[in-house]
Length: 334
Image 1: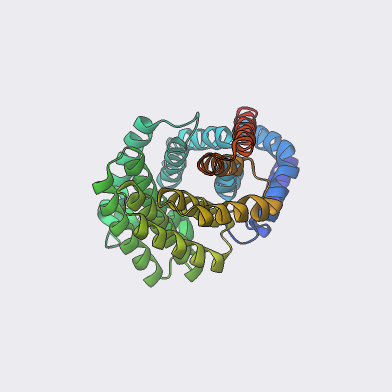
Image 2: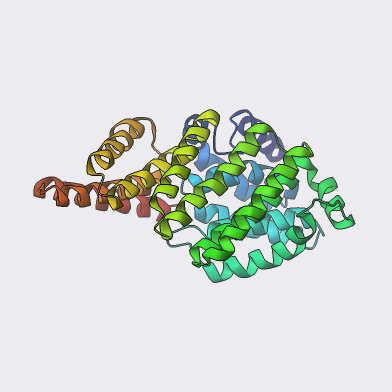
């Protein structure tokens, strides 16, 4: 075993201890840890690629792929996922190739400069054709069995749920809202089946279901069903608190502020925004969340305009621009 292999294996062990694989639990600690080691870890991964250390880089990527996305390192996520896809295909490592494609689709449906909905849709469609049609009942066909054996139950469940979530994300961003409703129903069925077969823990069942409820809130908002949308986001906050999913709690709160504005509930809107900006931000320093706070300051600017607070409105608009610029700078520097 080479020194580089030892270093990469040690990094893997450290990341597993920090719970970087899923974006809840010790999320703030994991974010700060990644920021502190990233310059060295990035170099080590690049050396691993140059030396052809497929297994080591692969294992590290699956611990890192979520936290790379949510700390704004989307370019790196795309780079490593594309490399893994290229390397997995000639090895006939089908499960890993599917997971790499799924990671790419997720990044291509993100907002901002890396969004490419046509590419996301084309890649998702091929993935779903191979996975969802046979796994809606998890019938354990030969193809599915091979994937489960090669990936293990945990990664296999991630692959299935990634594919379901990506289909929903693509549909909403393409404004195919009728298809999105169907994908929510299908996804919730699959979550329950995965849980019944003990592929996922109760916490992961909650995490996956929250994603679909969050998107239900968005769809209801787009259909002007504000009361129903508010109900979904309030439930998301309640359930997400149980598993410590802070990023989603902040997102749901910002949607509640938007809904309060739409319903002319200005005092409620101001209270929610104060909670997000003054309270939540004290413990949150993720680059990808700067965009969320920027949106909150834009909502607050609109609120100040309605309330006739001219100078406060200008200050909020300036802060929103600063946060969006900071987010773009962080993304462009990754």
